[in-house]
Length: 338
Image 1: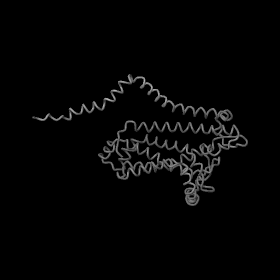
Image 2: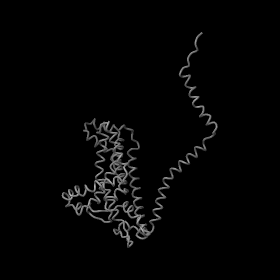
Image 3: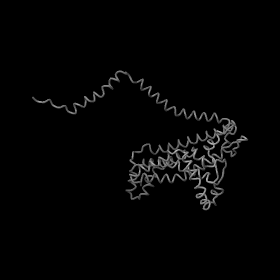
Image 4: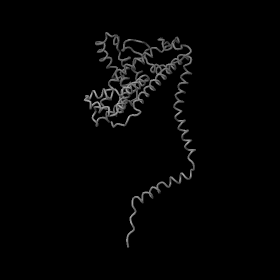
């Protein structure tokens, strides 16, 4: 008596698939048409997406309403006036605008070359086993709370600026006028240095991603033409990613403009415009953090909220432009293993 032939894999597979899908078929048959569920799901997701715009508009509206008194009282001159006297009710935002721009631009001058070097090393020169650890440590810097940066600056950077860096700069570059006057360790330069440390991981990480998005064919073409390693990086990588790098720098600028706690702890908090970088100053964010709880009059509070409105608009515009520039470079980029 012969044994029946064994079932082949081709015969068993349909049975297994049918057994697996039978509960799904039963569920679909019981619940009927899914058009209502799909439309409801799409409507909920649309509401979630629109809520982002609603939150932004709500914040903008609240700031405008509560800063109306200052807007009516001072108009556009509020941003060109240097006086800040809560006692007499005379307010102007120029010292804070100066402090914000000075610290942010100085921080960019310090952070951009270092961030560019880190990105070039990670994408072009770093041995593969070291790329992941170095990238992780670089991105980890962005996760450190700003108050921790501020404490580090108070206990390490301020004494270093007062006893070592400040005297050296006064001796070498004091004739320029930017490094003259009393140096107590706190001031515009110290705030710029801590800002540079804080925006370094943002710029370096984005620049690394942008350089990674450059096709390998650009590198291979440059090397095939006899270019050196540096010439390949300069011609094949940096030239093709310069728009995105500018966007990454602008994102770092957006972070620097709005940074509050660390800057407040080391900038000196004095509403003045001084040529010397050793002098204490004030930023738009730090004056709000310091004086909002002490604002007693309606005009005083309205002036602080108007400063917040200006900071809100500036950071929104800067970050939007930066995101568009980064997106313009990376939107069609092929994946490349780092």
